[in-house]
Length: 547
Image (tube, rainbow, N blue to C red; front, top):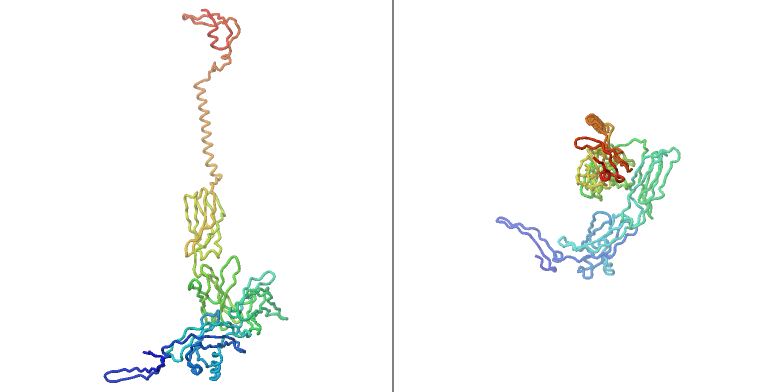
């Protein structure tokens, strides 16, 4: 057990047995090396190296209470480890060395005496005009010593040099128009943030015809925005180039051939398969292409949209690759994934598929329309919801048919159908629809109010009117027959009360003759009016007839 940092310790392992004894070689350990953790190092400066655009120089500063002497430091008693990486590059790299190794012994001693600093070994093999983040830790030279904590982090850019990387160039081609021109969009990837933070970069893109017998035509991109440019090119074969430049010069050009529509397709992969790894990544696999001129593959993916043309993303793979993993995707978004084989500067045929990292339920239902309607049936038509709002592949539809908010029926329709006929209807209906994916049923679409009234054909009208007419005729016949019987059995006798004489009364005061029956004998008597008569009562009161 080490209990003092000022002593030297010797260790030896001895193995004893009944017949022999064995021991290991002795190990000498300084107590300070085995028990002391060094102070956190201090980086006082991080700067580019003159005339070395791929290098950075670090300056180590000696802490105030650092126990090692200048001589020990300059003789390599301290081991350090650098950790560095560009801002937008995944992971970091490390490098180990000894303090004072970048200087001769006297330069190291003088630097520590005057400035209390040491210039470390240059950190090279870096990308020019790129910003790096660097930190450092240290320990005693022996492997028994513990590492210190990491130092403060410093950032700086490497020196400026002309770009050496060939820029990646891709294109999208729209079908040719009647004017024998087609719109070609040249696309390239943005420089890394660690590069644009250190220098100004710009691109030059242009195209020229490949088969012109005279002086070849050329087209240059004058408006380079958002790392793309639009060109109206003829339908002949065209070669396009792209260079990246800064104040120190230009990169080698990246070339791309745009074939004519009549050119033969060089080749294509047989099939592609896509598998979701998680909500933000996909694995794309493809079959091999056996042509010798194959130089690589290009995998393109873009969100499917009906509203706007989305900018595609792409990644190139070597000719030996059979899969790539694409990341930074979104769930519930449909992606169109395509694979092209590449033969030098020209791409072959494309195979595409559509997929999701994870499916959700549709956020809106289809909008229904009535295409046909008759006395009891309705033919409904619809279009699927916009692809941005489906959030998955539609497996089926549900048609809800409500009548006066009392009864409701549900009809299931296959996901590849866009029409459905409802039968046996009568009255007012509220009809709406939902779409299903593997994740479940989505939201309902707008409701449609439909009134189904019974329509009468000529045959129906005749069937309903003829019995009524027959019944009416029979009733008329019966009434006429009844009147005839009544006339024969009960002949018509005039009603004296209805005669005009029933309302006549004599008004003159003159004798009236009236037959009178008295004692079984009838005789005529002369009656005399005592007053003028006005009604029957007066006749009884004012007519005097002697017997």
